[in-house]
Length: 415
Image (cartoon, rainbow, N blue to C red; front, side, top):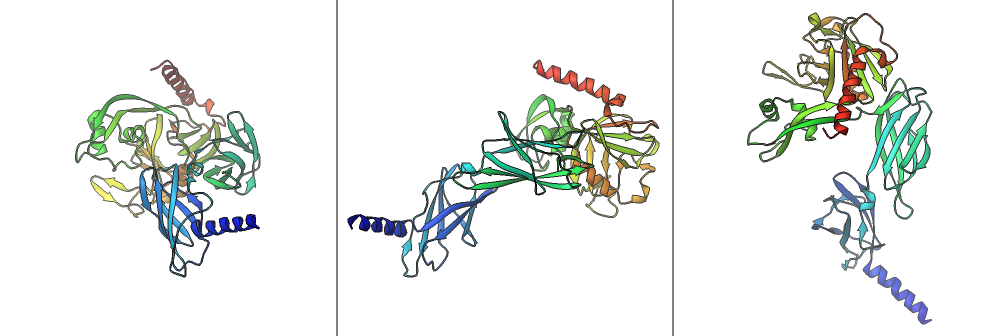
């Protein structure tokens, strides 16, 4: 009997002093949402405070027993909850544990997406500290293989064209799991990340610049004889306008090496071809410059913009304006005079009409933007030959391979 009383006492103690069941609901890039369930009749939403490595923060009630607070780069948190029951009593305490391990929800899941050009099968290399449970693309289950270097997901099933969703399920502590999703893009059976990956690159550092008040990235680039895109890439600037006084910028020039996607523009036939791992994927009609304004040669995609604004002799023309000739996408080439973009005049595609840029139908340039990597080489040629099935049959590509090999060898030797 005494043992039964002791169990009842412990049970009542838990109810009185640990009256809220707390678990992590979701973790985003900037915040954490907790699910808090009271074990009593609450007359109003409890007040929730979070104690972490940097001190206390207040969590905001966003409804349905959910409370959100800024991440703060926490690896652990202690929820402190003050509720009120129907008798007007303050109720505190949490279950199942007073200290929540947030790190387990925030481990990195890195993936590399590769299409086999021979049979169009898809391999996804997964690098993570989580245990991977399963993976699927658009709901079709992929084969899961565990290797010494991580996990591999594989499928030889045909993917639907254009946007795809890759979902990877990983195991958390206990019986919990979470899904991590990635947006992919398929063009004629070849699958990449949506809007491409980032081509490997090297750069030679010239100096370091401390931003002065009122300086723009364009002014800094001009001062050192580099491109604004060089500074954006080297310093990982998502928005070139978000620099500030006192900020230190590495100054240098970017040299992209070989990636998975490539573009060939033929000035003689007004056609553009896109390649993946050296295999022809698709051919598009384009408009090119008057009198072949863009010289044949090798260029690189240095920037990709959605709904670009147009600056024409100092005049700002907003995105989607009928007189904004850039259309819905703009792919800036390494020579800042030129780019590949959409158009507001689709009837001009196929003609020699531009000021040097390559124009495409908006739907086509959106497809190109969705598929190719930043840093992809663009080979501009002029001949009346058909695009070869293999990129290695284009002399400009062979020259590019030799050049990138020299760069790689120089880097391997320490510059």
